[in-house]
Length: 535
Image (cartoon, rainbow, N blue to C red; front, side):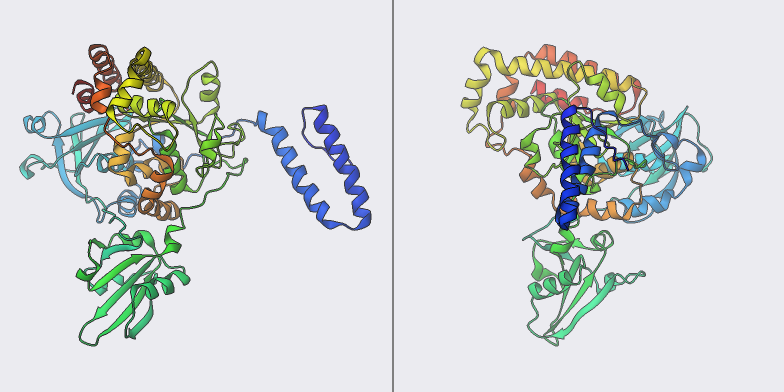
């Protein structure tokens, strides 16, 4: 009988031989604990020995996902159902068609991007806080057109009247997730009828008890592994009922935000069990073919670490990195020290610098590129280089003294902006699927952008586990930010602006904006970024 373990070094062969000899000797003595240890180490040895040359996997593309969803059939499949499940409180309302060349369209806030399917379009529009999405023909790909509301007289036409300049228009009703107060209080339920679900996910735990407080109700629902505890007060009988709701996502849509529990007849609290749903993540099976290898590309300081933490929380899949930074590992990014070639992690951090950047891109199936204001990115990166991860400058004067020395900040900003230009040029032209995400979009409205990334990872637009974890992530966002984002003591924007070459920065930022306008794969916040530079 021959035992074969992949190993590329003679040292590895010697180690394996020693284990085999020890295994035979100890097996005779009946020491079973060593057998288990040997089996574990043999598995790890085989895994490590083969991690450098993993065969290229053929990713199974879900039906009607991402860039494969251009047909009319794919645009309609589960369209309303997916959107209702995802992030809207009611089905999108079709209101007719709009013409983007209409003079009235020039008077309202709008944006247009190509190569989006209907679900992507809805997520993008809601992520940018637009109340309406419009879908039209864009050649090989659908065109996504987000806008503010139009006069009703300007949106009447037949459902089939879609041409190059006409778009099917839908009214969106975005889901609003209440913020967490006092660690557990969410808000009020308007009526007790809101507790009823067809799938039986609501149960009555305690009924008609006097002096029933929310801590007791919360503890009972938590022990039953339910997500929401609802305490209902009956003033006339001076008693209370406690009911538990299982589904976090379904419950959250029914809760009205409130700062004062005493205002509510039916008070809703989130259980510790619900918040634990997104607190753990694991490695992928290297042989799986659903979740692709995705590279997460940013310039330094553009929010890479926070993005990884949020997506890892929402998906339950560990994020990787090419840098193997122990500081990141200590912040629950446990895929940081794993080889990025092992196929056991995804959303792998890389700033795309150096000679090996092409090899990394070739290995990846898809790319996520996070975009942030160049000035804010430079401030964040300057703080990281000058201070520890947790610390920041205590005053504007101390920042300017350090930043102006040898033109340190001006050089850093110039290099980051040039790097941003190279990334924008390269990844707009690349043939691989690329998802462009604005850091500012995520900080303004995290849920739809988490779902865009999850969908890009082939996890499905109606994946119930991802939806539950995504809502959990929103409620836990303060915890994620505390572990990954720096807290600034003073606003450094004005001081940083005074140290840079504004004319050069404005010119290059406009060039980057024109690249995105040309390829229409993302709408960069060009004017916002320019206003930060101009002041």
